[in-house]
Image (tube, rainbow, N blue to C red; front, side, top):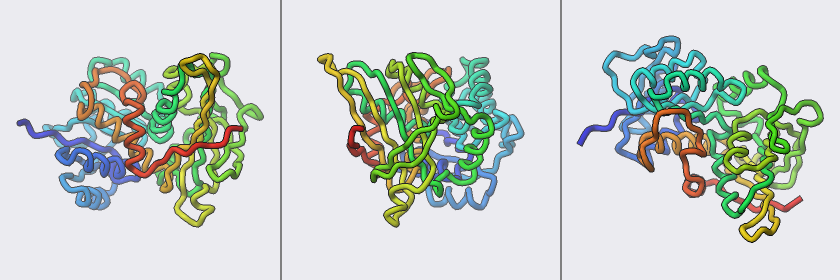
Length: 336
């Protein structure tokens, strides 16, 4: 039997990368991992903790990433911003699956164009959604009760002390520089909102209301096109989470409101929170791990070359099961 090739995780010693690596190690102990980081000492520590892993440094300014010729990998995961797209180029040059989480809605154009120009080279999973697509999958799991979804509204509370480390903070700052407008679907039209139209109250799981606003995230088009809902909005508030108010770790709380009709044609609505007591990191790591598992054919059929998003590859019910395994919970919320 052929020895499996290692998965190359760019930024593998960071919060999202190391968390995803730990999940993959638990799910698939036979999968070798290569932890790539700027700090070789930190990368080695992560690799040693995982077992069956190696550590390397890479140069994202180089198309070959500064890796020795002849080094083989099974896929490339960019858990940091691949600003020169050299992680993607490396994957395409070697015919490998590629996954990224840091481009965001306002920055995906170069990545999508690069993927489309060599569409037959690699499967490219664009997972720059909130929590790497976990929230989209959670919403779609709830939408199974509906025959038709008319409206989706997401309200995410991100603790101000839980922005995801230096890489996550840099992403948020970059996106804020690109646009202050939010992206919504309204009456079937994708549009931008700013000013008062972008403002929103976001309820925490404990009932506290935080001021928030619509944000430009890939979750909006993913949910709109997956459900067919003509009205989709994603609001975010950054502040003190319910967990920290209790004197515990910063939590993440995502309220998912759906409206539509059931299979009998009766109008229904559901409101649930997706909550994790340890914040956004576990859900982001899960989103990455689910994408890698699928791209490597460790679950499901082989993913064909082309551009993909999480909801086009990952079964929502399976994702919800994995969420429960890592300590996330779905909690019914009072209807407004």
